[in-house]
Image (tube, rainbow, N blue to C red):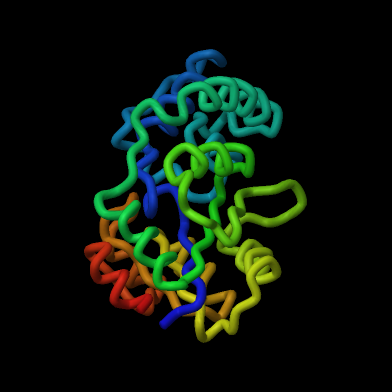
Length: 216
């Protein structure tokens, strides 16, 4: 049985894509740039807000100044609308309760900025006793740099052999590999299963039941 399961947030625990896309499109509109269909956003997200905003801008407009301006509008909108359309993936609340009831600690490692991670976790999973909730913070590199995993292990020390990292993207699988911990890629997230295989996921799971058996 694992002692600790670390979860990515967007695309793993929660389907946040519509709210992320709407907030980004709002920022683009406020700054006079063309918007994107929500269906395009799975390929934009995953590397933090800065990279998201860089990717959605026209190539000729990808300057630090423009990204900073977009970020102001994004946070203004997302702070008020982060739960408009976001929902947990089927079986996730039950999975978290089953893990913690069996003595498995759970944590979050997200490239979303820290304030939004804390708000969204408190809203959707208020009864889960999280061992750590880690988002993007100033001065700490984003995934796939493994620093966020080491932050979690600093708060909840566990042997790496007893830790499982769960995510939906190649970035997540690479994060786990760099941290030298076992990885599980979920098939229901924002990225295709082919990407999980390409980044050497140790396991690919298609249901929360499979994930529970893997952790226990």
